[in-house]
Length: 321
Image (cartoon, rainbow, N blue to C red; front, side, top):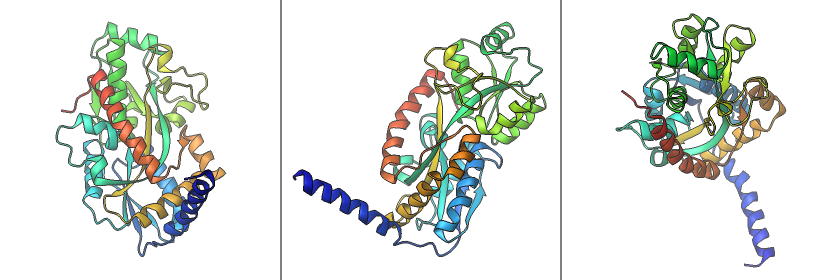
């Protein structure tokens, strides 16, 4: 194929995509399952995107929170639902990557049972402590944990979630012993952290940034390779533990077998809203980086993420009871 023919072919494909995305129209409200509790980072982002894409799809996108088992309950419900474009799940790096390695009998397989629609964003975790904890930085927190093995309680959104994995990796890399306390979602864990029932948490930045800014929680370090523009004075964990990085992500999935036209229509709507200044500003306020990938790009991304997170699970020693 010569260069002119190749360009013509690509142009034809690009022209065909919008037509394909418009060939399916939802005829009733779309149910977006969030497999975590209301108020957590996944829930907050899902609601922002659902509200924004509703006018583009012509039907309400309704949130259905189904927490439990590290996101597996809600994810399995969508995997087993009718693949007609009217049921979606807001999957995460936990539900569609980490859990493959953590759960011996995972009730679904991300690559087999879902049709990737679009990645929505990347999200950092922020290590925070209750202000009554004496440590003001990560080296001091590590020293405190070494002096009092097992007495620091680290909350998380459920066994095997990114919060659990991040904290387990910190403990493993730093050589300290902490107690992991699992909750049914991030919001109840943050509530107990604020109340002093637990001492620390590696929480999605969106779930704790307001509390940090108000002085109700103390930011210790961030899990991504670079510091967050929202908290430029807060160091990365890698500045104390070289090579440490945990970058979370989320995105929309449909059940396997969903018509490609439905997948493309929803994916196009998501990409459009994530390009708007308003949505980018809202996600930036949470410390999230918008993506808006095609179904094909998202599928390729997930295939690479599954072995990556499996290796992180192995290194951290994280387990699910």
